[in-house]
Amino acid sequence: GNLGADPMELINELSNRIVMDGYDTKIVAASFKGVQQIRDAFNYGAQSITAPVEILKQIFKNPSIEKAVDDFNADWYSMYGESKGICDL
Image (cartoon, rainbow, N blue to C red; front, side, top):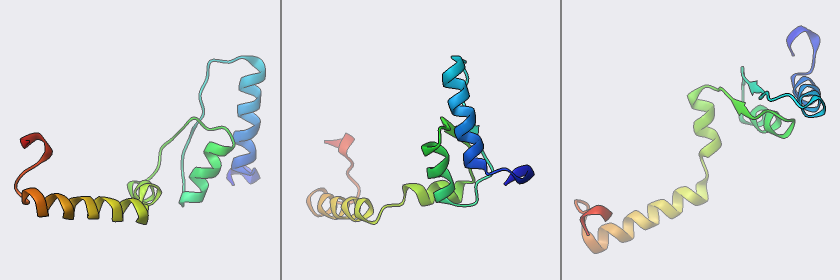
Protein backbone atom coordinates (compact mmCIF):
# COMPACT_ATOMS: atom_id res chain seq x y z
CA GLY A 1 0.00 0.00 0.00
CA ASN A 2 0.89 3.65 -0.18
CA LEU A 3 3.21 4.81 2.61
CA GLY A 4 3.04 1.39 4.25
CA ALA A 5 -0.71 1.64 4.87
CA ASP A 6 -3.30 -0.92 3.82
CA PRO A 7 -5.40 0.97 1.25
CA MET A 8 -8.62 -0.85 2.16
CA GLU A 9 -8.10 -0.12 5.84
CA LEU A 10 -7.58 3.53 4.94
CA ILE A 11 -10.78 3.62 2.87
CA ASN A 12 -12.65 2.00 5.76
CA GLU A 13 -11.28 4.46 8.32
CA LEU A 14 -12.03 7.47 6.11
CA SER A 15 -15.53 6.19 5.37
CA ASN A 16 -16.26 5.72 9.07
CA ARG A 17 -14.93 9.19 9.90
CA ILE A 18 -17.01 10.79 7.13
CA VAL A 19 -20.16 9.14 8.51
CA MET A 20 -19.35 9.87 12.16
CA ASP A 21 -18.59 13.54 11.54
CA GLY A 22 -21.42 14.02 9.05
CA TYR A 23 -19.25 15.29 6.22
CA ASP A 24 -20.83 15.68 2.79
CA THR A 25 -17.86 13.98 1.16
CA LYS A 26 -17.39 11.00 -1.12
CA ILE A 27 -14.39 8.71 -1.47
CA VAL A 28 -13.06 8.20 -5.00
CA ALA A 29 -10.64 5.26 -5.05
CA ALA A 30 -8.02 4.79 -7.77
CA SER A 31 -4.84 2.99 -8.84
CA PHE A 32 -6.32 -0.49 -9.16
CA LYS A 33 -4.45 -3.52 -10.46
CA GLY A 34 -7.36 -5.96 -10.54
CA VAL A 35 -11.08 -6.56 -10.18
CA GLN A 36 -10.92 -7.78 -6.58
CA GLN A 37 -9.33 -4.51 -5.46
CA ILE A 38 -12.29 -2.62 -6.92
CA ARG A 39 -14.78 -4.90 -5.17
CA ASP A 40 -12.89 -4.46 -1.92
CA ALA A 41 -12.81 -0.67 -2.29
CA PHE A 42 -16.61 -0.53 -2.62
CA ASN A 43 -17.06 -3.01 0.25
CA TYR A 44 -14.83 -0.87 2.48
CA GLY A 45 -16.71 2.36 1.77
CA ALA A 46 -15.59 3.97 -1.50
CA GLN A 47 -18.49 5.54 -3.41
CA SER A 48 -16.70 5.95 -6.75
CA ILE A 49 -13.68 4.59 -8.55
CA THR A 50 -11.47 5.40 -11.47
CA ALA A 51 -9.87 2.41 -13.17
CA PRO A 52 -8.27 1.28 -16.43
CA VAL A 53 -10.74 0.31 -19.15
CA GLU A 54 -9.44 -3.27 -19.30
CA ILE A 55 -10.21 -3.84 -15.61
CA LEU A 56 -13.68 -2.32 -16.01
CA LYS A 57 -14.36 -4.67 -18.93
CA GLN A 58 -13.44 -7.61 -16.71
CA ILE A 59 -15.91 -6.48 -14.04
CA PHE A 60 -18.83 -6.50 -16.43
CA LYS A 61 -17.84 -9.69 -18.22
CA ASN A 62 -20.24 -12.45 -17.25
CA PRO A 63 -20.40 -15.69 -19.26
CA SER A 64 -24.07 -16.29 -18.40
CA ILE A 65 -25.09 -12.82 -19.58
CA GLU A 66 -22.93 -13.09 -22.69
CA LYS A 67 -24.59 -16.43 -23.56
CA ALA A 68 -28.07 -14.97 -22.99
CA VAL A 69 -27.29 -12.03 -25.29
CA ASP A 70 -25.83 -14.34 -27.94
CA ASP A 71 -28.90 -16.61 -27.73
CA PHE A 72 -31.24 -13.63 -27.98
CA ASN A 73 -29.38 -12.31 -31.02
CA ALA A 74 -29.50 -15.72 -32.70
CA ASP A 75 -33.25 -15.98 -32.07
CA TRP A 76 -33.78 -12.42 -33.29
CA TYR A 77 -31.81 -12.95 -36.49
CA SER A 78 -33.67 -16.19 -37.22
CA MET A 79 -37.01 -14.36 -36.95
CA TYR A 80 -36.25 -10.93 -38.43
CA GLY A 81 -32.88 -11.17 -40.17
CA GLU A 82 -29.66 -9.38 -39.29
CA SER A 83 -30.63 -6.09 -40.90
CA LYS A 84 -33.75 -5.43 -38.78
CA GLY A 85 -33.47 -3.97 -35.30
CA ILE A 86 -36.03 -3.57 -32.53
CA CYS A 87 -36.64 0.05 -33.57
CA ASP A 88 -37.65 -1.16 -37.04
CA LEU A 89 -40.67 -3.12 -35.76
